[in-house]
Image (cartoon, rainbow, N blue to C red):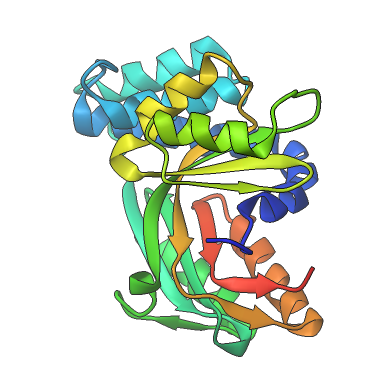
Length: 242
């Protein structure tokens, strides 16, 4: 994973995301709703719901919004139902792209995603086209500003509590975990640190180096996809030059 910092992508999107608070809340409500509908309202036994609620709280979603989403999901009379669909394809220069969506209208979402790929020099593929190049991992970012912790100390800390890897830059510690260890590692780190980011993500195991011109095209395609209200996350395996 070295040399492929997710934090660089997060930083580039933070300003745009701040302007899209409504979209973020809408996505989080859908995630809470579906997690509660699939696994029930008890966060003690429903880890997916616990993660969705934690993400909502980290984004300062009001408690009433969270409670309403859970209540709607566990109400037998509720009619809405969302499907999780992952789209796979290639962007410019053969960059692999995964698009995770949560939608109540699969025809609408499929059309939007396909159009985004087609209009931005990409190709939408079948299931399995690129997913083998990615692995689900836990990801936690801790900004270093104000911290009196060096890299060696942080590495020992995260390994002792069950993390797999640590990447360090001047700005941030990036911790990666196995999927099944993510919740436990996150809770341990929250005792001593403020987490800038904590989520389950798709991490590429094959990277494609791209030049500046191709990087711009990848950013454009990703931006169009992320603007879609049905899209939760977009992952790619492009490795941008510093």
